[in-house]
Image: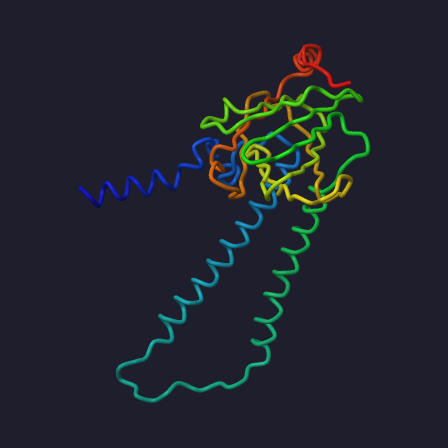
Length: 258
């Protein structure tokens, strides 16, 4: 009984910071449902890496089993097998194959990283994200109009935290900043996260990223993914994707700072 209680406590502790993560999908490599075009890029790279890793593991395992079965010592023979000091073709082979594999991984990773880092000059929506201990401040700008900032506080349920409302099928540019410590802006449905590092000046491309939302209306969980202090686990928020007509109504009702 004490062992079962300890195991239950361990499981509860391990999942305490992950109760808002959406259900994974086997068809997308156990990634959560994606709601951005950039998420599809991540899925493609993720699945390709898994396929390559599993194929490599299968080949290595097959070679290990082959060596164990066909090169085991025979009981009737006390002689050592032929000793080979050098085999130039094999040495070239096991040098070139890993080099080719790493080069392929590097090519696709660099290509997709460049895609994820692209930003446009005129996005449909701009969002200034300010991460602080231990919540978020979202300031949305649409067509030169800045909306009243949405400011949150530490909560235990992402649905109670600050909510960022965005339209579907639009380009959204995020500008990340922090006045205190390193945070991380993570919406699992985006399928990637970005660190929010204090001290980076405004206008630096290192604090800006962009997504193109898909036609997937709904409310999606968001959180800080970098341990940032005592209330890190309660630094939760949500992203609500809505159709354009509903977003227009939201803009009409939202207050403006200009």
